[in-house]
Length: 157
Image (tube, rainbow, N blue to C red; front, side, top):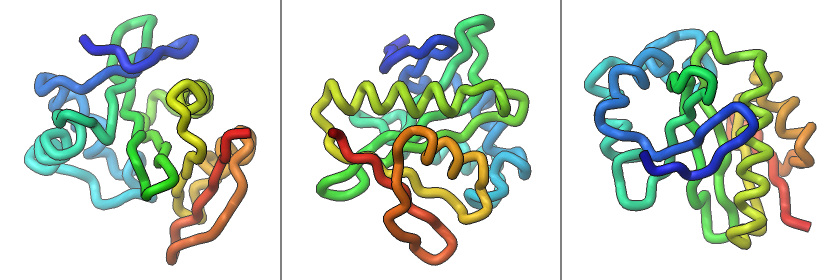
């Protein structure tokens, strides 16, 4: 297991091919995918992992709960454009309302400081109230929107 970083309750690590079935449990859930895209089927999930997670420089990372080593979702973290990195998370429904998204956000902010990354972007649907609240709570400022997506930015001080 290749650990990317940890938080109080979570281990953020590289995905493994064997994670596909567990990953499908949140990516196939219409409630989880409501603001993102159509729910995935097994083939779409495997392609998603192959092209975004199981690559040399992953765009997404597995999020595992420390107490039971269960996968509860994934972290999105990758270059967004020349100056920014994108930060996001998709968590299974039973992991909502436990503060995990906030822990992931704070963990990436710390990681970005260590790596010398000056700017983080969170994109979310205009109706994703929880994501907006986490962005604002962590010092992200709304910088624009692209159709129905809002963009929040946090620059390193």
